[in-house]
Amino acid sequence: MGGNDQAGLHGSVLDQLGLLITSEELAPGRVLRIEELEARFGVSRSVIREAIRVLESMGMVSSRRRVGVTVAPRSAWNLFDPRIIGWRLDGDGRDEQLRSLSELRRGVEPVAAALAARRAAPAQCGTLTGAVMQMAVHAKSGDLDAYLEADILFHRTLLEASGNEMLGALGDVVASVLAGRHHHHLFPARPEPAAIRWHAEVAQAVQAGDPEAAERAMRDIVEEATRAMLGEPVREAPDAS
Image (cartoon, rainbow, N blue to C red; front, side, top):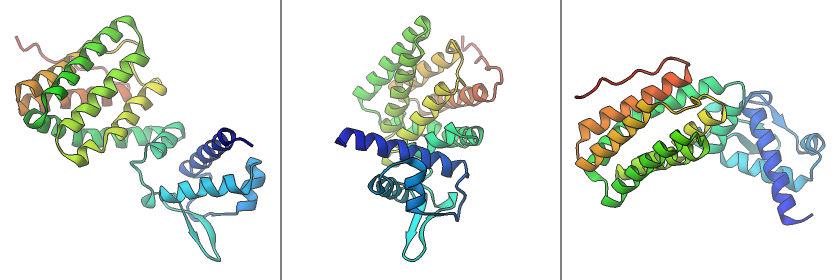
């Protein structure tokens, strides 16, 4: 079997096992037998072992001599791993995962915006402004895939511009939230004009070095995303004029 085929099998088995564990079809404490997994998925022992190795690195299973491979409790998982986030979004616990991620964003992104207003480099300010322009263009054309790319670029850049490496490392987590909303149709068919305006306000505040305005506009963005996820109407910001 070629290397690409082997890698494809490994990825498929990993995804299936990840979904089974996150959905608790394979519940915490369950002992996984390699030979049973071979038969279940119709793959070689080496493919199963590689998938188990990756799951173990993510904290989802543990291996002990004379016990074997055991499914770990959720408290042991690396919950920030984009693959775990993706599996949880694809399973029955999607609403719980989206809510948890939205609450994380509420606590992180407004703070990152305020820090970015103090620390962003000129190139990062330019990237933020360019991303907003692309979002506006793609919202008008209805190209939601391109809109998502620009939106992810905006949020990744903002986290990096905070100058805090711990916040910057959350870029994949926020990208998973945005992609999950898109993938599961928790996103309006036409992006809300208010949301694009708030992104523009963040970019302008960061450029102007105004931490309070940047934090306020970012909080509006995160609140809008949460309301959209829960099916609530979007609150229009009052006209500043």
